[in-house]
Image 1 (cartoon, one colour):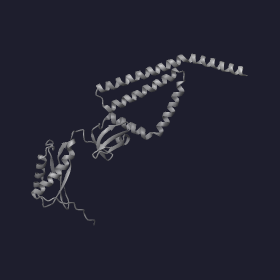
Image 2: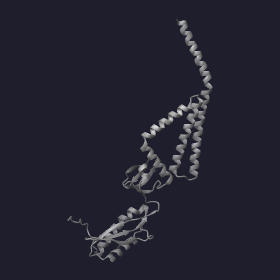
Image 3: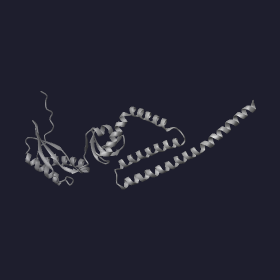
Length: 273
């Protein structure tokens, strides 16, 4: 019995060694293709990134395209690797297709964000460091990712907006023109002289070093209500000076009005009839 068992083991061992020797060339060739392919893919990826940098392509778009190319080449290398091992690739591709369909159906929202990220990267409604207003949020664009856009608000909060709704909504970009107009409102008493108030406001804006004189700042009557005269004040400034200009103009106008005896009408809530 023992002799028969030893003979069986010996037979299996010989068969295994024979199969291994027959299969060894395919295994060695497949491993060589794998390692050489990974090295070549890394070189191609570096070369593509360098070329896009030399051509001054947008940094976000460059990274996205380089990553897409990297994964496409890796998938092709993997298919070549298993094909060299003698594994049938047609069934493997069918499995990948079915898996891709299932994943696509379960990640419809993520695919929408992915498509939105592609549109933002390609059409560039805004860039990194631009100040924008979108989806009720105002802030500086910190990073444009594939699925979300990261925005830093004025109070240093980090806000992530999905690219799907961002690309389909209204986007106000304050950085494209480089300068920005403020829309400030003062409520004056009916006892105040409009021409005198306008002259004071224009002088205040003229004296402020961060208020641009071209385009010229303006003052106009916005509305006449039951309680007050509403004046609109429109100083122009660089984007980075906008907040400072708004605050300073309001403060300086109030101080100048007090010195000239011009009364500001306090807010009065209209009674319900």
